Length: 403
Image 1: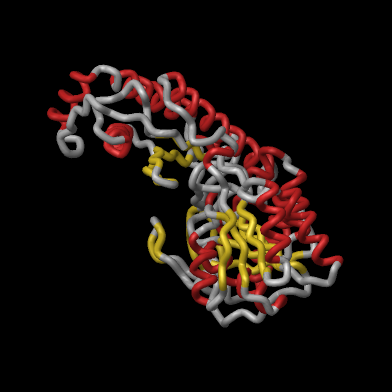
Image 2: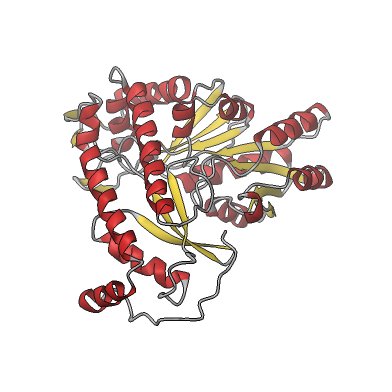
């Protein structure tokens, strides 16, 4: 019997994990091709459904990435309803768009408006759903919007009412919940509204690898009896990891090795709360210096509007973003620059980190932000460190409406 010697890896660093008594060690796990590995797979899937998500009556299919999971869900929606229209928001993940294009379907995007804090106009949404009701095959609700950090894009109460109403009228509409990024919010918030949405859904996607196990572990759940005929594939056919080439079953076995330990749910809840707290502290550091948030912190994403009325020595907000990105990168902070409707923001996706390391980074960021208001210091720093292109002072810097 072929065995794979591996060390459990995950997004949680070793120090934070040990703090919550999660033990990471070396273990022997058998290959997916035998009954022992199949038992491990089923144990993990049952545990994740019942204990983590707390939903029931779903058949879960493991895949290697969220893109594939969403692709299967969109395929199932079209198969069961026979209708080609997929309704999402302007923040629906690109994997949904790819699935729609791949399967030659149609897509309608209902906007989340900047002036409403990136929420939908409720009256506009109700009117549009009623207009499209005969054509809609699938509605995709996103839990945890990576672009700006909102908890969800669609108002959950409106979507649930509409779906149940249409089902009562005999109009089949498939509800897919894309919680690949935001499923841990269920644990942190103990949000029954999200759990009810997932329970009413026909399918959902979550990506455990964002918190437990190595990369390459996504799950798509189908309401019992609604599993589509999927193309033959070998789940976890092997991937290159930091420990070398893996065998089948590596990702799911690694995740189960962690989750089966006593206190694993408590650990995830604590980590989720700690990461959210860090996100709030990150936001407070920026607002202290006069920056505005794109929207209130609701998840582990912090999005900072790069327009600042008192920082005029960068000729564009994008140039300011480049400078901050280069400066913060020197202290190991993960971030990127996002553009939403012509507005630029600096986005942070917070991950678990040892408290001492996090606060050290926060202090360094605070010093960098404070120095932004010293024009000569910034210009000298740019010349000495060759960070980006030389900046142009623009005395006529114009304001624009923040996102």
